[in-house]
Length: 231
Image (cartoon, rainbow, N blue to C red; front, side, top):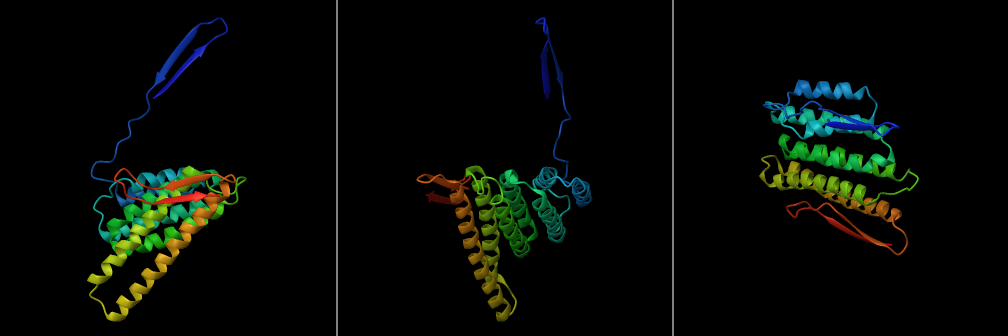
């Protein structure tokens, strides 16, 4: 809905209203072909906002007839798009990056715990890259809103890692494979700790001396994380 009112120099006024198209979730979900087509079209824009909006829209709707394999493939396409967006995003787009990345990681759970953890591996590298972008701006750091969004991303990544770790006990593979899986889980925990530390450092960089703040990804259900910072 767009409403415009104009007034001329004699005081006469006029107004008009234009109704935009009604946008609804597709019945039965979005087909993989439709999702891939939308992503391919968006790639050509080379605009971070366009790419992020498309990724966010696709990750928030059901994929029709999605087997775990199709869901894993779609998650890969979404992460490809996110990686493209990172190369053109401005520091001001860090908050949007964080929130969309959280959405993609959460949607990857439909592919299974190991596939979701693999997606989270890629996502953790993106958080690294996004924090690098944030530190290149004039203010060189992240504000509260961007920090909360990135903490939400890290939280989603941690949940995916945790689900994969929980599934190790039910693995029917050899002891060697289970040992390798446990070693990978340990590496992932260390990566999460490093990301939280990096985020805290970027947020501290934006804080005036002598001030305090709190980053939070706690949702309405009470789940999430908090980081208290003091400079």
